Length: 424
Ligand SMILES: Cc1ncc(COP(=O)(O)O)c(C=O)c1O
Image (tube, rainbow, N blue to C red; front, side):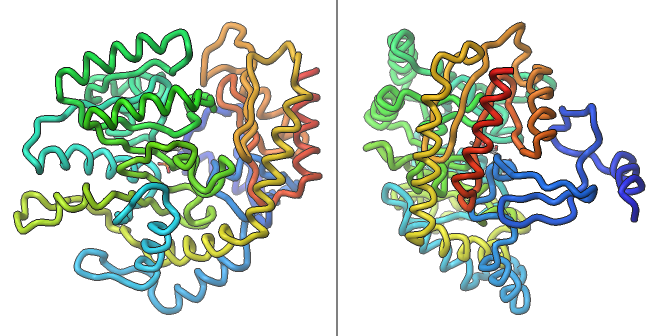
């Protein structure tokens, strides 16, 4: 099929997600390898956003390809209620072995949004099951936790969610913490804790993703976690974006002394090959569901829960992630990102710039900002594409979050293109 024909059919039949960069048709991809995307019209793009932050070791890594092939010959998928299988059991045990805190059980779902929905429902039902009226949820302003209704409620009345605003449940929002507003946050917390009704805080540890790639002040975020823990508020860490090495640690919750009760995972879990969500819970949480009263069990499940191919991919991705080679790659990328910050000093186009592990993020000074819908981000997107780089700015936020297979020379090249863009 010719490229033009495919492009026409794409426009005619396919509804793409987040289709905001509309001025050109979608790029048709022929194949991928490592951090490269080969388009049908012969271009080779370097993926600097890990294909929406899912890819860890490079596209088509042979170890993961082989694991999926082997698994597909034996068992692809089977109902996961009343049945189980080795790839899921192995993965659950391995995740529990590396997750921060004292995680005890893994509940599988399909993606980041469902992992968060599961975490939210576990937290709310935990209190229900033990007969406590705790129903309020805390979240940070600017949070993004996915596109299902619970996850949208957590993000609040963002432009994404406007059409659904009347159907979102109420959440108590904490301002994005800084030294100036911390007293306000303490006041909100104090007032809410007094009601005794706060069930959980759902938070992205260390860095907000889609909400602007903003870094939390670690000390202040930890103080909030501490206060929640002291006031019987469950901590639900959304590590969908931060998990599996992105922040330089295996999980961002490792930065804190206060560990979560529930952790939501997805994106990098399969190394970017197949969809999979996972939500972990401590023994304390699991135990109140594990009883003879059928009304108290966790009545939640997705058709593809525990998909064997996804679990096999995730196990193979973990094999790679836990090698010394991968650890060193993450360290080298992290070092190169933090060294680049010096070159950004004094740049008049930037409000702030910072790195966390393998992520480099900066915010351009808003002109008349339209936030996520700012046409500046579309222009930047096109600018980088013309230079064969896949970078996908989020409104004013510009960031690089490469797969760990990226060579340092490739990263420096991409950083230099960012510099040229900022200096043009
Ligand atoms: C922190 C966070 N949570 C949840 C999600 C939702 O994940 P998914 O797109 O797989 O539903 C995202 C997606 O970007 C995310 O960044």
